[in-house]
Length: 158
Length: 158
DNA sequence: ACAAACCCTACTTAGCTGATGGAGTAAATT
DNA sequence: AATTTACTCCATCAGCTAAGTAGGGTTTGT
Image 1 (cartoon, rainbow over the protein chains, first blue to last red):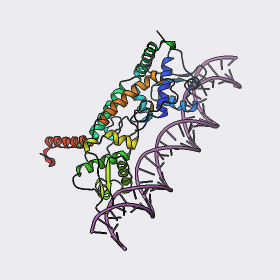
Image 2: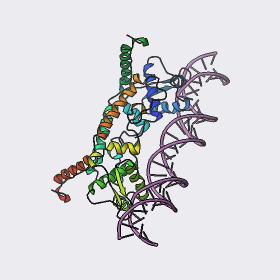
Image 3: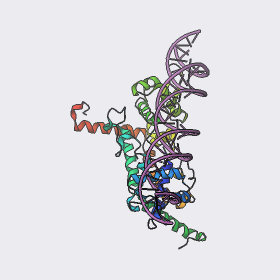
Image 4: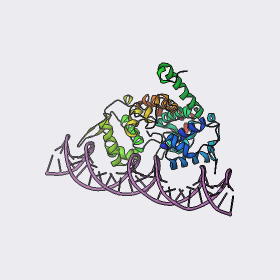
């Protein structure tokens, strides 16, 4: 199927970055761009779209920059994915956020394919809408601490 | 995200069509094309690809046509989707059929995003690889019989 | 030989993705 | 008020893919 777009992947990285620094005041686009290796102008578009959708806030001029508007635990993967990659469903006729009938389906109530595609959509949405940026960060920490235990030489040991 | 391609949707329709007629000898491309409203030349490409992947068989010349090579219960949605739309995973780093590392991920064992994208992949693959053309057809019949019960005027009542 | 029917290669068109460039606007500092 | 710092907006571009079209070529049955 199709893979997540670069925009979505960059957006997720940017959100994690901002979440980690959310008590340090506004973050500059250029800092984020350099640290995360995201093309500067492309990143601008992404942050702007996140702002226009209420996920980020920005401040212009000296001392300005970007910051989270919502708490990391209130930003779901589903929101971000839908914003940049559109509906989660594999067929428009099973989409909740962007329903559209299939052009040649004479009766979708009876379509067997639709039934299973709806199961896929529901399973996917359950995960994406049930996982937040906070979950992603804590999962990363958990994975790091586990790895530190199994190979103590890395210097991450607790 | 991305929706299933027309090719995949046409392929699924064609397979159901062939499954329903699997005891009636080879089916002509032109019959399938007309009955299912699939552009003739486009359908040729699709059937050919299904044949080259061992799902269909064909016979040339007069009296020829297409037929299933495998039983309907041995053709999964996952096979068809992967054939025409590529891997099921949302990121290459969680794909089983087409693994590739993410270019800028310094350590994927510790990537929180990857963890949840793998959950999505597994949930999706479980459904798509666990559902066959036979399942789709019997689900259609079940839905039809249910609808007939609730609205007897349609003429489908059992 | 002839016609039926699948096989193969190439092409076209439109739309999207990822990215870039440059001018505009707002805020803080001097 | 001028200057600097940063975000904002608009326009453009190259490359790619999906969907479909075109036109022969090859095989088979009668």
